[in-house]
Length: 453
Image 1 (cartoon, rainbow, N blue to C red):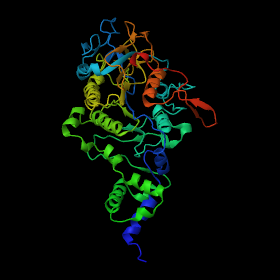
Image 2: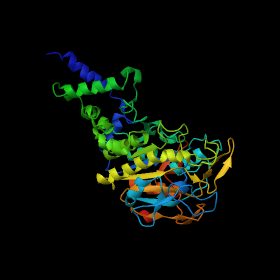
Image 3: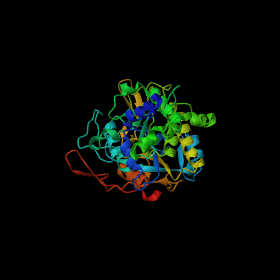
């Protein structure tokens, strides 16, 4: 009997050696089991998260006629939707306002950054609040829960991706570390490539780096038709071979497949390319993609939306950093929403733009440099919703004349999450089991926002 060629043995041996491959924490066995699961909704959510707490009074709920030291520092402009006005620094938003809805009555009671984000992202308020904003969650966030309940993607796509980094305040906890988001880094950087693949049961040193692994995959693809090594494998291994050699994952992360004109329309910066990558991943089938919206690296040193006194505001000139952020933010979010509609993806993909809270109605001067700003304010803030097959071109809820609290249709973070989970096909009453065996529902309370349905 003729012995197999050395090349033949190498292909089979290499395939078996990397059989523990996991993408976004997904083992091959789980990926293949996913192909036998009941069908799940082919829907996705892109969360553009304004970390730090964007001022509702300077973005989506301006109060230009309020008292001195309380009114918005910017002018409102009209939009394509009658009666809907937004900040003058969001002209691209204004042109596509018929493609999104605003919620002006978001509200909760946690005025600390990490704890506010934990409440917003998990729907479960921390049992003990940490005023130092160093708290980490006791429960997984909605992306982690979605990854768990959706199960592995049949094409091995990660179910939860976050860019440029993962949320620092949420943890998978009792779900297990495999449900943490895949972090992409900054896709606008020259030479950026798809994230490193994690391996289950293998040391990353064994594969040296991602580039070598990709070369191995390319070699397997190019030789599989000329060699019949995989024909000798059992059905499981044959299916696993197909998953490992599929280009679907690499394709989803490949921004070079987009035209230069489209990439330019999003903006060649962190926000723009992150939003474009988010659309590609959602279109391919990733369930949850978060874009943590900081100022691009070529912006000012202060990078998030925490615009209170002491954060380097020049005396007498509140919101200078918002003025810097707005062009990036306006371009990226508007391009994302418009692109989704142009591709007829507005039923498949839901876009949510929100932060952990808003800002105080009163502008104050404070230490250390007598700078001017607004403090944390969870009692009233705004969110933008686009797509998801929901009702667009409307304003949900309202706040009083000073933007202090909702006067109509209050919406909690749990209600917003219930709306998100509904789009993702997840039962909010489903229970998970924590580390000591107690049942924990996806949400203890909350209901989808009826005005959007």
